[in-house]
Image 1 (tube, rainbow, N blue to C red):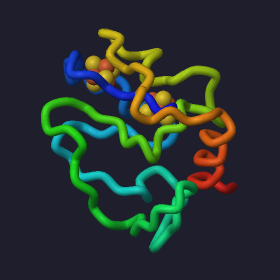
Image 2: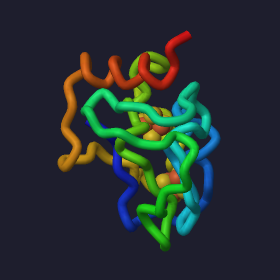
Image 3: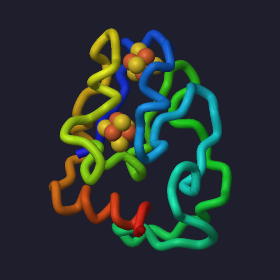
Length: 116
Ligand code: SF4
Ligand code: SF4
C-alpha cells in the first residue's frame, strides 16, 4: 500500500529528498508524473488510468507535505523500508488504508516508472 502523510506533519522537508520515486511534494505545490521518473508524454498507468506525465497536477494538500499515491511504491524495488517513514521526526508517514496494494503491484508500479 502507499504511505500517507498525516496532518501531524511539521513541514520539516526531511522526507522529500529521500523518496526514490519523487512521490513527495511540499504543500500547495503542483506535481507531475514525470518528476523523478522515466515517464513522458501520454501514458497508461498500471491501473489503466490515462495521464499526461508532463502535465501539472493539483496539490493533494495545501497545508503539509503530501505523497502522490500513484507514485509511491512503499520504496519497493529500491529499499527495504519506506524511507520517508524512516527519516520523519514525528512519525507521521503511515500506511494509507485508502490505497492498499500488494507487493507484486507495488513492484509493477516501480518498474513502470523506472523501466531501466
Ligand atoms: S514510501 Fe518510499 S516511495 Fe513512498 S513516498 Fe515514502 S519514500 Fe517515497
Ligand atoms: S519528514 Fe515528516 S514532518 Fe518532515 S515534511 Fe516529511 S512528513 Fe512532514
